[in-house]
Length: 332
Image (tube, rainbow, N blue to C red; front, side, top):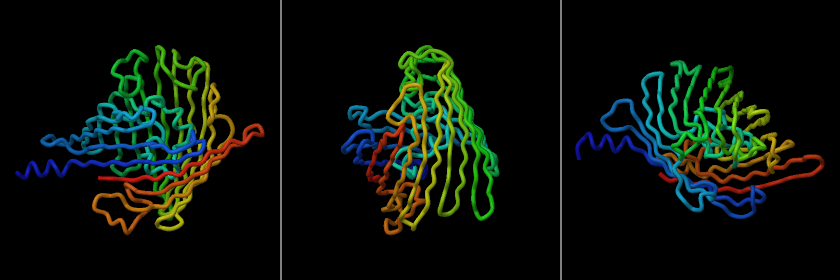
C-alpha cells in the first residue's frame, strides 16, 4: 500500500452511537431507541482544504428506516469555511451542540420547536459561509437554503430560507469563558407544514421570521446557558426560553437543572406553563478512539453514559410530569 493510500485511510473517521431509553410520559411510556446514528467524515484525498461528512439515523418515527441526515462538503481555508449540502443551519446555541453532549436527555422544547427545520430533523439543503476571527472572539455565519427541509430537493414549499448567526466570545476572570449570540432566519412559504406554530398547520403560507438571543458561561466544573427564541408566522407569534445549568460532582458524576417555557398558537403537551427539569448523569467511559475506559470524564468528546431526568410542570393548578432513563453507547 502506498503512502498516499495510507494517508487517505487515516484521514477518514467513522463514529456511531445509540441512545436507548425507558420513559414515562416522555412523550410515551415504555422502551425506545431514541437515536441510533452512524457517520463518516474526513478529508477528500487529493484536494486541499476540502472535507466531507455523511450521517444517517435510525429513529422510531421512520418505521425502522435509516434516514439520511447530513451529507455535505466543506471547504476550509484559514478563517473562512464554506459548506454545501444538507446540514443544520446556524441558528440557536443549543441546536449547535450535539445531542450526545447535552446534559439532559432532550434539548429544550423551545429549541426543538422554533428552529427553522424543526419538522425535518433540524436540517435543510443549501450553502453556508462561516467566518471565525483568528483570536476566536467572533464567529459569523450566513446561509441560503431551499427552505423545504431535509431530504427534499424541490423548493415548492418556500422561496428559499436565509439564516444568519453571530457569536461573540470572551475569556473572563478565573478561567471562565463567556459567549453572547444572536440568530435570525427569514423565508416566505407557499404552503408548508410548520406544526404547532400556526393554526393553519400543514398549509401555512406567508412570511416566516424567527430570531433568538443566547448567552453562555463555562468554567472547569460548571456551565450555565440560556436562550430566548421567537417566531412570527403571519399574525401568529410563538416564543419561549430556557435556562440550563450543570455541575460536576466528580470526574464521573454530573447534575443538571433547567427551567423551560414554550408558548405556541396550538397547545401541546410541552407548551404553556413553566417546566422544571432535573437530571443526573453517570459517565461510564471515554468514547474517544484509543482512550482508556478506566478514566471516564464528563468532558470526553464521545461519552458513554447513563442518564436520568425528571420533569414537572404546574399549569392552572394541574401538574404534568415525565421521567426517563437513557443509556448512551458509542462505537468507533
